[in-house]
Image (cartoon, rainbow, N blue to C red; front, side, top):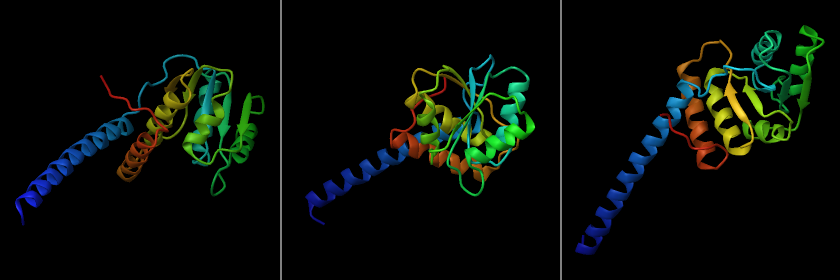
Length: 187
């Protein structure tokens, strides 16, 4: 190699190393949020945002919060895949609690859509009801896409596997890199 090529090769190696360190740090930060969802709900929320994606557990947990008077209404969002559409989940909620105040949003095809399509709702205190691994991505999407909301997380009690945590870590990082979720750090 000529001296100039060696110099550019060294710059490339250094740039790759810096990029690797930054990518690893971002991945670790995202993983920390997925493992321990931010801002657990401690007070009353105007509504519970229930994104489709889990046929039943999220809806049942949101109904539990409503029965305990911790949320005022349910917003079920999503076009759904594999039988978990917002309409199906709303029907399930109404069969369990006919009097539950309920808003159904059927256009969302992603977590970001679930949040963005629900931003226009009147409430400003929002409890995000989803599984523990997914809660961080919904929460950070809400802080980015709905800055007027005061969001908190109320994850379902079901256990989360390592595979689910890993998948959500990469998805959260992807959302952050594409501007659909805020970048946040823990104190």
